[in-house]
Image 1 (spheres, protein in one colour):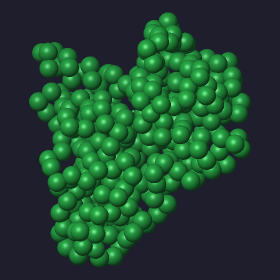
Image 2 (tube, rainbow, N blue to C red):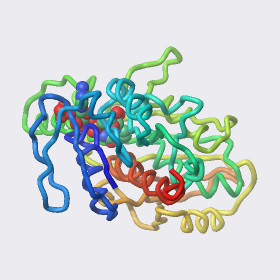
Image 3 (cartoon, protein in one colour):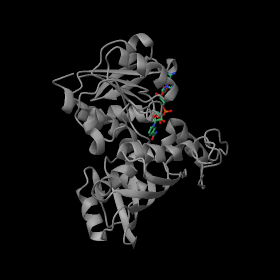
Image 4 (tube, rainbow, N blue to C red):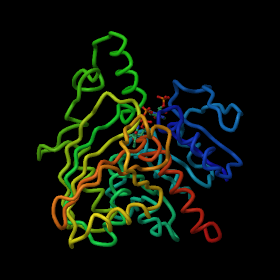
Length: 325
Ligand SMILES: NC(=O)c1ccc[n+]([C@@H]2O[C@H](COP(=O)([O-])OP(=O)(O)OC[C@H]3O[C@@H](n4cnc5c(N)ncnc54)[C@H](OP(=O)(O)O)[C@@H]3O)[C@@H](O)[C@H]2O)c1
């Protein structure tokens, strides 16, 4: 397959290249794109150096089997439609197209079947949403979910290369902050992204709207608080969820155990335990009443929450369509 990665020098883009290798995707030609300043940089794939090229409209008009975009919304809005108009399938990691009616928003284990006979732009959800819906997916299917109360504990890598650099610089004594709205070293910041008119942040409203779209249920109420913490890799989430019917804690545990790419654990799970993994971990399961339960969910935000989900979308799309498209 001929694959292009747009934003290949970024936190997610570099990880996409790694995941393509880790998941053994049959890549016969790999093209890497970033901004002008990264032209000629080298990135390794299967022990070979690949040269990064400057992204241009002309390069998006070539034929690819898949283009993985991870260079932010502005770049996606400009270049992804050009690539799609030229017959390419684009898997886009930004928020640019997620809530567009005709664009599928995909977590393959949940709604991957929407990719059958589909061509064009496919949206990859927000990192916090992916691990939350994966953890709850079997419960949603079996019982239906009416409400989700969630507080996130999000790693600085969720803000890309700049987020990681800001924490590391502060750990080394530099107390400037440009990227986060407060010092992040020795601190937590209960704001991620710009505010909306309703007082929630954009990051929080992504969890509300994307969850409804992925579960195809507009009635689900999500009550989110998104918080940045001084962790490098791995988002954690404290989730309380209310089911549409009553259940036992044993039935909840058994359904989580059977969920694809999700692992139930009786042990303490922290971000340091999951960094580099493609599994979403669910632990600290508790029952409050006959239909209300609590869990602690941890996953690698750059892999599960971005790069691995994108590559899983690619593999699912290929599996469903390779003879037809
Ligand atoms: N980090 C996460 O956990 C995560 C999770 C889910 C979704 N996302 C989304 O994924 C996207 C990338 O995030 P990231 O964390 O990887 O950010 P990042 O580390 O800041 O990387 C950004 C990438 O975009 C490229 N880029 C920026 N402007 C460009 C332009 N004008 N033309 C071509 N390339 C350009 C950069 O190239 P240069 O190096 O040349 O500047 C770099 O490769 C964002 O939309 C983000 O919201 C991130």
